[in-house]
Image 1 (spheres, rainbow, N blue to C red):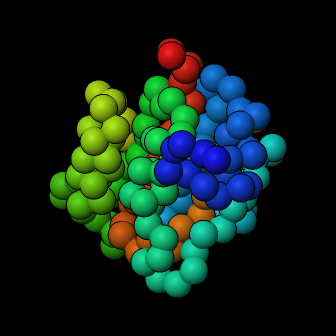
Image 2 (tube, helix red, strand yellow; image 1 turned 60 degrees about the horizontal axis):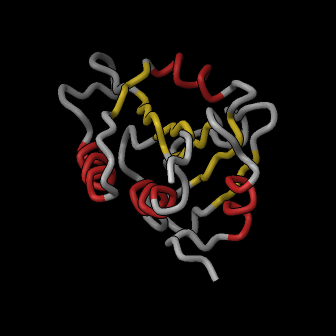
Length: 148
């Protein structure tokens, strides 16, 4: 019986064999999860219907199960058709989940095209595709070292 909140068997399998520096992408409903993926990464689709399941829900489950040392967001565009002038509201949800887990991680934005490159590395082990409809809700987590 698992003690943490994450109970998905495939996700537990992948993170169970992952090591330090492995990267997990929590992808929103707009992310091209089938084509923008690392060469060895596995894809788990949790996109049941729009808004179910969300990136924040997946983050909360992962934080209960694996140590995280870095959290990168996809930087929003400040000009053009998808422009935003301030952080997307979902980032506040991420910060709250991280704080609730007792971590002092800061979200580190990566420019959109550099974010795709960061996902395309051999360290990318898993993409969890959600149906989150919030803009710029993609989150790339780096696994840390277990200290206990």
